[in-house]
Length: 389
Image (cartoon, rainbow, N blue to C red):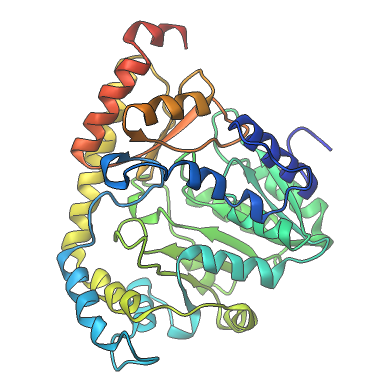
């Protein structure tokens, strides 16, 4: 096995190493479920929930908009019913994204859609091709299905290696069940230009399914970025995943969706599990209508991100270019050590992302939370220490 990729076994081994790096004691037979971040989440919840600045999970730092809260409140009238006469979230999404309703699958969070895709197109000895680090939910699910993960290293500049993805997919063509592209990538925050997405799709066999995770689509400012939805409309075997957890502030309400051809939606439908609640459906429709609040959330997030990044860069720290509601900063120290140092000062920051274990992911919070982060940063990393990174 080359150093630039890992199989299913290698990925799980890397997961176990990461847990060990976190000070945990992974079992020798580590399952995908055991690496579902449960240990990390448990360790981060042993505190007074509201007293911490929560910059660890890429959430919207503000509550959902007033219109969303009003819609959710109104939906409680039907909380005791299996059905309701209310909002058609599928129609609202289709109208917003310019697709037909039979091209939309809603799920309780976009993670559920990722699992549906994995269950549909992966299985024993099938392969998923992607990069590492990235949002690894699909990899963990693939491992549970006894599929193989081919996770390629990022380029030196932390961009995704499109050429290697094409080469690897073609080399393993008969066994590749899925190509996985997170755009913008998590945890790096770097977006992929539309020309590179086109290059990927044109470079691999035309019948290979491609999943493009666009959870952070709304934050992208890169003028060369485009959503992958037009490729779905072209008839390519492309699936696009989206979420209401980020820009719309509905993480706990659980609403995500996927867009694909009607044929692919029909193929995935038998593996769809869980219903989207009435709260999520009514809130989601209200969120899509409330473009003013969406614009406000976006401006506030980008302003705070840019301000914080500029201050850190002014201190000499390296930060990867971000098109998301978080940034990835080089600390020069083990991330678990840094994570605990911030926790001791009342700030929760991101988990480790192997193999970039000296980088820290920081979600954008409120102005007060970002002030608390910067105050803690200056104590943990005195200005004079930046010169040694």
